[in-house]
Each structure stands twice: as structure tokens, then as C-alpha cells.
Image 1 (cartoon, one colour):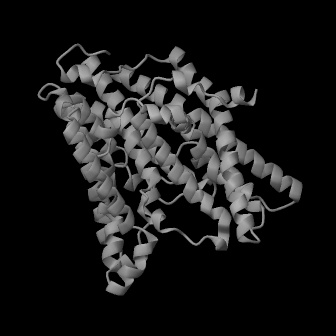
Image 2 (cartoon, rainbow, N blue to C red):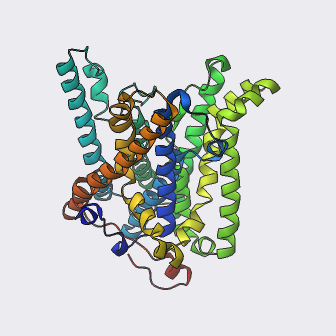
Image 3 (tube, helix red, strand yellow):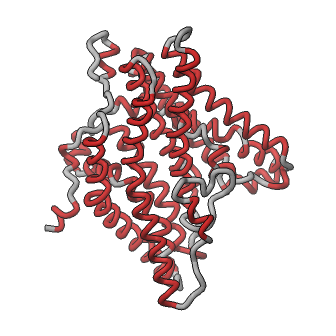
Length: 415
């Protein structure tokens, strides 16, 4: 009975296994980072942690690749970019992200109010004006996220990217479609966002003294509008240059290069390296790097993973037999629920209320944290996220898919 309760029928789900691996890696890195909070002063760190990429940046690239591909295919199939295409795109994106988010946000607000009322404590929620920002994703639009539900900084960046990318593409199409091909318009749109955001960060980085630190650019919408555009650039190459995308030798070389660059970039920005920078007297240079090109480098390095991972269509038999493939697909499916539940709802509001009096207690808290995250995320996905997402099929037009292998061979494209 329990097996049926938590089963997601992953074996019958049609998915790209390599992209599931990327998504699973991303969420496991994020949750692992938050799990260390349970150890408190008993956390000693681990060298391999400094080699791990930023899981959120990996999510950005993967999200950009997937939604960018959808947007490009929709644009090419219709032959124009109009209001109907835009509204359908937004409807499908927001049915995927907003219901789960508002459910968890509402639950946190209710929990905070009840806790404050029962204990007689002072209110633990931000004031109404600040709280209202969370409902329209401007809690970190131009400044860092307040302390309440802080992990939503990355979701706000994604949501604003879903707004700005298609809007800019619509504007570009309106202005240039008479003279330019759709391919050129798509490329100009992507590069405008990437170049524009990088120039904006550079301008601010030059204007504000280095002594004021990294300026928390990582979690501010205006300084991270390029975050998903690197993945969109990957979708552009996949759609318009399928012969290169499906070249096995090129895929492997790009993946190895991307993996090396990602690890080196992660190490270059890790706490481990700060002591070396201080001893070498280059902390100012490091700070400027983190304000500016770090985000460009990490985004492009992870984008190099995409051809190989997109080409990894099915899991090897050994992973299927061992159950690992099923576990990876399961984690990939519940990754959004894991993202919403792991830090504030589970770690901050529950796990951290248990005193960490020893290393043993700390590790027990870590184990309990993982169990709760996996169980509650599975239930949230199965009984709320999935049904609500499926509802959009009745309220919006299905978006086109493609078989890239057929395009590469000059055969008919399935849309």
C-alpha cells in the first residue's frame, strides 16, 4: 500500500534520461547544501563540496534550454509571434510553477500566524507591503530577498525571465520580421538579454566601490535576467544546427570541456579559495570577478553539458536493473516540490527547532531532513503539482515537440 502511495509510475513516463540526470543533480546539490545547516557548529565541510557546481545555476540553464526550445518551436511552427502565442506560453509556464508556489507560500504564512498566536510571540512575518511582493515575484527585483522564504530568489528570476524573454522576442519580431529571418530574430533576442545583463552588472560593478563586496548580485532579478538565456542559447543551436548538436564526437568533447570548466569555476568561487586570494592580495579582483563575468562563465560552462545530456535518451540497462534509473527519474519529477519544501518549510520551521547538542544529533537531523524532504515532496507532486499541471492541457494549446534526429537526417519533423 505504501509503495503504491509513493509510486509515480516512472517506468511509463516518456522523458530524456540525460536531462533527468541534470535535474536530479541540481536539486540534490541544493538540498545537500541546506542539509548541512542541521549540523550547526559540527559541520566541518568537505573538499568535494568545493568542486560541486551551483545547483541553482544548473537549474537555470536546464530551464532555459527546455522553455527556450518550446518558445523557438512555437515561433517557427506558427511563422509569427503574436498575442495568442504569448498568452499560451505564459499559461502553460504558470500552470507549471504558480499553484505549487502559492500553496507553499500560503501554508508558510498560515503557519507563522498560528505559531505567533499560540505562543504569544511577536509577529514573525514581514510587514504587509513586503509580504505582498512575494505574490508578484518582486521580493528581490532590485535588492536581495528578505529573510522570509529566502530561497524564492531563484524562482523570481525564472518567472521574470519567462516574462522578459518572450516579450522581447515579440518586440523583435514586430520590428524586424519584414527584413530578418526568424532565426536571426531569435539569436538577436538571446544575445540582447545576455549582453545587456552583463553590461548592466559591469556598469554597477564599476560604479560601486569594491569594499562593499559582491553586492549579492546572485539573487537579484535585475542583475540575473541572463540566467536562463544560456540554456536558451543551447536550445537555439539544437533547433537551427541539428547536425552539430547530434554529432557524437562533438557532444563528448563539449561535455568534457564543460564539466572541467564548471568544476574549475565552482572551485574558483568557493570559500576554500578565499584564504588563497587573501594571501595573494587579490580579494578585490575576486570580488570584481564575482560581480561580473562569473555568471557568464558558469552559465556557458553548464550549457556545454547540454548536447551530450540531451542525447542521452534512455538509461543503461544496468541502471534500470538496479533501480537507480527509476530513482533518478523520481527525483527529477519531484524536484520542484523539493525546491519549495526543503529549506524554509522543513529545515527552518521543523528540523532546526531540534537542538544540535552533538555531532550524532546533527547527523540524525540530517537523515530526518532527507526523509521528510523526499516523502513530503513526493506527496505534494503526486496529489497536487501533477494534477494541477495536467489541468493546463484543457486550458491551453499543446506546444510543439520535435524529433531532432529526424531533422538532422532531413526527414519530416514531428510537431
